[in-house]
Length: 379
Image (cartoon, rainbow, N blue to C red; front, side):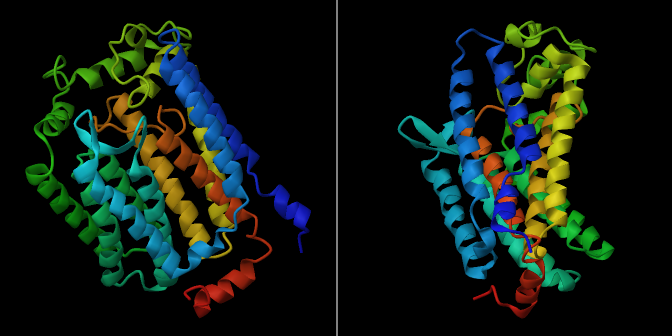
């Protein structure tokens, strides 16, 4: 039986935290290399400090209370309300009502809603993983994710909606869906995309998707962002142009260098060598999250960790794919590196929650399993 001291030592996953902080510092360094005194650098440095504090706080919390059905459902419903309010009271930024403003402070409810969705789905599948081949559970879980998907798509935030869909799809896949039901899921996704195309997407979003099919058709219009991004990534070559010497970003040819295209800005200055560093750091984070999933005291902790992996992985793949011209532009940040306080705090909170769950994984594994299957945590 581990001692209290040894349990506390495991409260911090120094490898995952170190990789996340290094990625954040690389993002800060990239932001600061464009313009002297750029406000993005100072603000993001403050958010990083707050995020690290959130991590240490979350790592000390006993998150087993989330396993109660009432808590998971209440958290999910509580975060649906702000998403609804966005449609009426949200502040439009670049055409999307994604922000709730409180004076000079703005927050993006979608980031916390993603985490709440992972909790809700992990709780749902943790009690029904044996029955997952029943189509009813696919439909019910899809309804949870579908409501969030629709509310985000209506903002309109296509990138955020895609992330929500991928989180749900990832958890359905690891829960053991049958091939027949998987075909139904992809058929439903095709129908949902068709409905979104005709009734949900704005003209500029449709144009971005069409530009992906014909990338050189309108490089001064809808294809401008994608074109400049691929030029920036390619011009970095092996060792990059040097910090502060990226012409595409320095001369502002590259749009949204601090958020949607920070990977391209970084790649231009650091080259292939820098890309290997970033991929390696993300590899460490993914490995540690998978390790947390393997050590889960119960199905809930395991599925929650896998949901976080889907969350980070979806953001990473979409952002890098967009920046390299492999995917259509949808406006997606990359974890830890992109500018923004809302997503940065939630990302460190997610890692902190995993660390907090790991504190009790070995000592209570058998007890957690007994209580889970007997319904002891559904009260």
